[in-house]
Length: 360
Image (cartoon, rainbow, N blue to C red; front, side):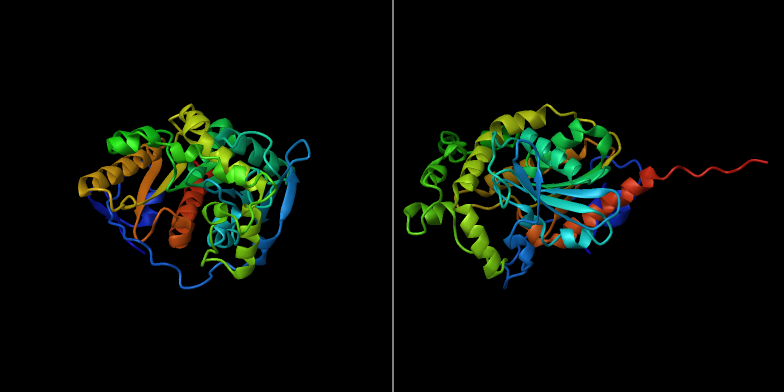
């Protein structure tokens, strides 16, 4: 277990999370890239078929993957164009002690096609309805990766009395586009965000699915993931070629810097004392075209945005995760599990009434 440094003092991760009166803490730990996986680590056949299809209105169903029992329930939200499999290395450990649910957003995985834009607010509407229908009762600890980090903040703002903690795994920030653009080279700024507007893949799937022998297949569907079993890869490549997935993917990307960012920006900046644990990989991804100064600027900007999110609670902390890339949930699942347990510990402490001493 790595030691974390905060305010000049060495503190264990557990102590850092449960100490009362914590403000936003920035932990400086140099991270290095995680080696490529040696073989499949995710083989559970549950990811090859729908698990629990829950009607969220109008006959549209969301695929819900719930395990375990115990309160608070831990709710997982994945990043852009990802599914419940994003939590395959984390959720089993949490479900040993608590109810836990991950899910496929509309159009993703085994959920039905989306009927409205893929925004953070619509995501929150869907999962909240699904939890109600599935009788997964609050309180909740919300866990969001990447763009899911914005969605969980929208959820926590909208349903304030139902959320007792958040874990944000290398989360996106509502201002990351403007801040990163400001430090980019002029030639990069000129085409900033163009990739998020690309509808090539959706257009290629308009016949129902992208053909394997088409030029668009490699770009839009990709190759098998070495982290997954062949059965899971076969299933994922099949549904990623379908129009419902490509349309939802395009909508999520198009909403990311616009509606989803605006909806997140409109949420409150003060979540009181609920635990907010932010996990940040560092340094920022290195590109050959970047100078060292540009690399340092990106790393500092990414950490600063995460510091700001952690500062939204008096029990907030930003932990820098070594030996991980953006996919901390795959690269260092044990760190994510530990962070969730920290949040659960703080929530349990806050829910326990203070002891009173009887007077004679």
